[in-house]
Length: 563
Image (cartoon, rainbow, N blue to C red; front, side, top):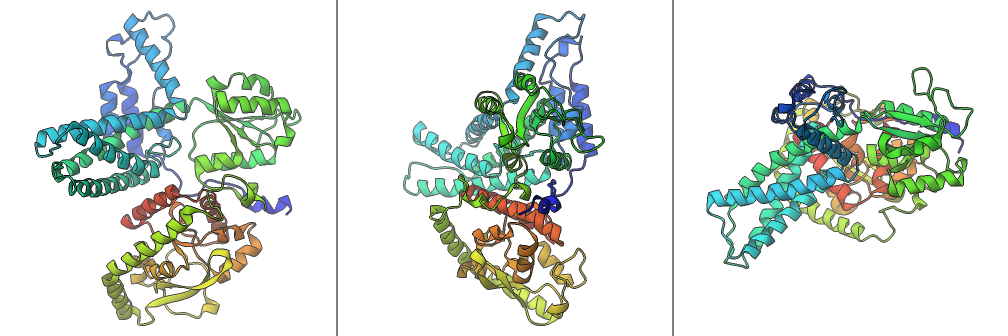
């Protein structure tokens, strides 16, 4: 396939743009004001109480952009101002600040810190709450230890699913806050089920419902607060470090354009082994200048760069350079290929680096014989059966309202494409007025006049999707997977979008990774952007990713983000 065909697919960061919140900016300025200045030795403490108070006060601001903190938060001082004599205690604080800042530069540091705080805070909260209530009783310390491990295991698992230990997950957004709340709530429910199931077999164990619920109610805001607080310092400590991008050609230029549209705040430094590109802007006027002397930069990795990104073909690099990069990957800093950077930082795959042999690469979670594949099918059958029974009153109510407002039919039927290109009939509640399909626009636009007033609410709450539970029970689709596309659209996309057919490697689903990360599609370009997320799902097909999709879907339903 000619390379020019990929010109349409210049990578860019999708999703809603992050906007700076004035509340967040005020919080950052208060932190800056609360931070001790040189010469104020009496108050020179790294974790100043006033700063902590203002940080926590601004925890729940509606902001999608943590880079405000990076710009306004004062960096840790690793050396005293010139000409000012510092007391020994102040010098000790400075050294500790330098160690703290250095600690946060490691990729594993924040995960270790989050885990440590979760273990300590849950132990303290559960123990103190039980002591005050006097109504939780365990016959032996061993019983308490086992119950504590069960609770902690459930909590850690739930937070792991929503990225609570992932350094790359932005924790200063309302979206993450909602997912965190849902994860801790789910952990409380599962913990209660496990503990009270165990208590039925051991009469000496008398756990208290009030202690358990109160402990989770306290742990939820506390665990969210220190995650957001630590995230602010992680952003501030990494903002002074750059990514070193090796490559100065068209691929590197496309990567720069995608990066400049993303919320990442770290700078990019481009370096190329091709001397002809040195001194040229990477992507036109105003973009970074391609530099040379790669060897000198590789000798200063740990102090200046938080990672290396390969935007050049491996064949263009010397064997000596490749060996140096391998050494850096294992002993100094992370080395990303473009594919791994997109997957790690932005959770999607750019089409420009996909080739026909992509599904044959190692590392795919999706396999011909996968235990999770059968487990997922069992879950689909059980969950869809239970959901159909529970939602029977909602089915009757919605059907009645549709009949009253717009007559029949109540259900919308359409041919969709499933796994391996198999065709089937999908069922949904009808949300649009009846019209001739030949004259119908294949996309549902914003404020589309064909959508009824009742249909808008059904779409916003995703209730129009409920009849698809029958398709999931039959095996046409799964509960989780790429959106099942209309056969008419699928035929069109397969002719115009490279590798679109790869999305048929898995069963489609009622909700999926693209649906919860990208707005409702209403153009061919939107289909391209959503395909990037579908390919990421296929690449990382797993229980963890499905659990993340479930939590994000609940957030969408609860806060009315559908269309």
